[in-house]
Amino acid sequence: MDPDLAVPAISSGASILVAVISAATAIIIANRANSRTLVQAERNDATSEKLKMLELEYSRERDRESTLNELEMRLANQKLETFTPMLELMEDALYKRINLDDPKQLRNFVSKTSRFAMWVNLIGSDEVARSYASFQQATYASAPPNVLLWHYADFLLAARRDLGYAATMLGRPDMLKSLLRDFYSASMERKLSRPLSEVVEDSGWTPPWGKT
Image 1 (cartoon, rainbow, N blue to C red):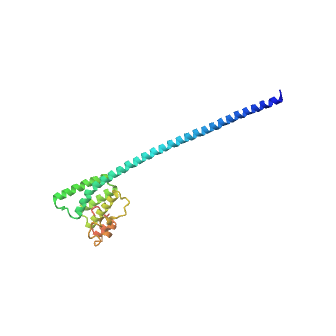
Image 2: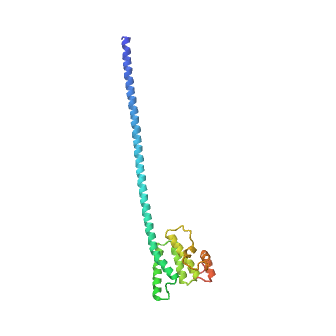
Image 3: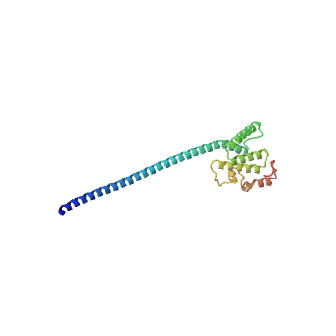
């Protein structure tokens, strides 16, 4: 073969080979790009799915919180409706607007307090139920005024906490400060701030259930 004729043939073959390699390289690069695109798309789909799940979970949690808040509000309103008549009745008794020597008024008083005792034991907090029971027992036992006022203030404070002010900074004296005209002259701030046992001891009264 003529050497001069072989060179172009080799050059032509080399060009074809280069072209094939270039095409193959381009295909490989394109496939890699497509693979990366597919992987990224799959990742995006997975991320999107996770976001949808998180949004759904958040929506459900928000619905649960909304339902819980609604139930708590309904319970608080029920408690308020239950507490209000009794608090008004106790205020009437405190200011002697009720004549308990009158059989009709006495029956009405006993009926309302008994009905309230049933409801407060069902829907009231433990603190409210206990404080009201203690107040009633002191009333039945004809406790001295200072002891009754201590129990009454303790019940009001428990009711305040139960109606939504669990972290209240007020105390027993604050519950009666606006109700008693002789609050300061009668040293009620000091008396209501003291433990019940000391109030009972100072009154010289012996509870029928023993020492507090």
